[in-house]
Length: 172
Image (cartoon, rainbow, N blue to C red; front, side, top):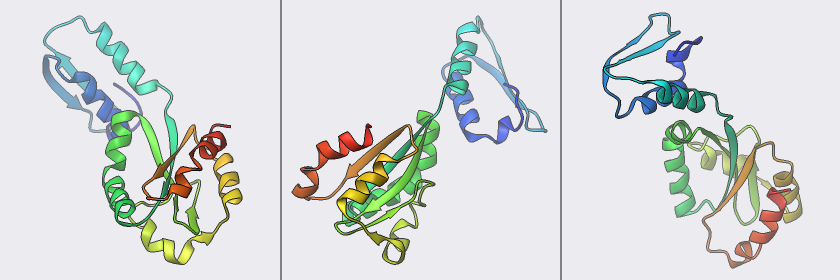
């Protein structure tokens, strides 16, 4: 695999190694300039391997926005886990997951560029704004992502009653 900065691109490296899983690898090599990764296999043919690598590397990546409803025990634990696993999850799936918002019963911390999951709760108190349901729906409708996923970790029946509205809002 050859390309500018290939060895410094974690997504490309991960996909390269994933494609080599289970293959009879004789040896691997990385150029000092960081522009190539090489694997020599003990057996061929390699056509399907190369085709799989090409599809893996050049498929269109999706950006998926995530809006977390609830910042209590479960929500704060989810944020910790997401902060720790976000890079791995993105590399494994080929999707870029962006924490776009954290919402509680009255206020929202929203940012299309993404929030740092490890610091979202710390900033929530100072930076979250009161937001009514309609403005939240408008913000969600205008999202720039390929998909927007709403994560409800609350026990709110009122929020659960709005699931159909959320689905209609984020899919239009």
